[in-house]
Structure formats: structure tokens, C-alpha cells
Length: 206
Image (cartoon, rainbow, N blue to C red):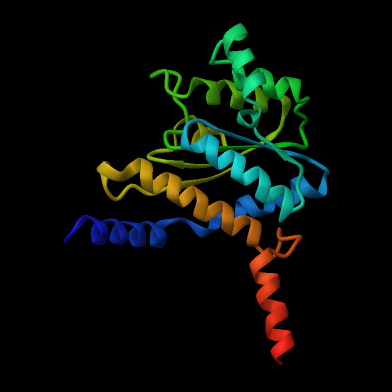
């Protein structure tokens, strides 16, 4: 079996093992957040930071939920890291954003954060702050999910089928799940460009 075939086979295995009930729990929390006028704050580092920026776009434009990510403002983020430190950078950004109980903090992370091993401590501190405020927490994580999975109100853990490909599969399926969320009938508030274009084509050809 070559690597490409193996990778696709692993992806198929993961897709069959992801718990759909956890995704539906997330949908209900997001519907509630929107209904209460809450906002979503997406947190991630590395690939998760890129996902956060993309998700902000999708949830604002498609799901009509006010959304933000600290990594979208590199000037503020680096100032907070420089002046206050990495560990509290996201926490203090949430404080500056006036995080409220109606809001939701959404994490994209492979490990989910682990203070004991000093991994993604900024995520852990941010989630601890969210809990103090009473905000809801969601996450799409890998491995055992770390701190995020322990305290989240709804969390999808991407199953591990190969120890050598934990990160690429986790980050790939984070995108799969959040695109499922914004296209879910309970959340989708606006039609996407290609779907609307193809829909009008079908009507004009009818």
C-alpha cells in the first residue's frame, strides 16, 4: 500500500468513528449562542490559528454569528505576548473583548492544551477564564483532547488511527467538522456562492 492509499484509508476510518452526537451537541450550543446574541471566539495555534481565521469568515457570513479570532490582529497579539507573556495572551484578549456568559469559545487544537507539560498553555488559560465568566466552550481536537475535552460543553475528538499522522488528520477533520456546522440546516443562514449559482442554473434550465 503506498502512502496516498494509506492516508485515504485512514481518513475513511476516522470518518466512520467520529461521534455524530457530539457534533449535534455543538450545533445546539451554536444555535443557542446565536439566539442569545452571543459571539464566538475562535482560538488556535499553528494550523489551528489558520482554521480560526477561516472559521470566523464562515460563521459570520454563512451562519450569521458574530465571530472573532485573536490571531487576526497580529499587532495586538504580539503586543500582548511581548508585554504580558504567551500564556495569558489569549486570556487577556478575551478579557479585552468583554467576554460574556452568552458567548462561546471555540478551540481548534491537536492536543487540546496541557499545563503539566506546558503545551498550548495559552489555550488552557483562556479556557479557564471562559469558565470563570460562564461562557460555553466547544472544541475540535485530537488524541485524548487534553484540557479542552475535559472542560468543554461539546467537543469532537478526532480518533487516532495512526500515531504517525495525528496532526494532519486532526487538522483536516477540524475543517470537515466546522464546514458541516455552517452548512447544517439549523445553522445555515445564507446560501453559499456556488450552491446559489448552481441553483439558479437549474431553475433557468427547467
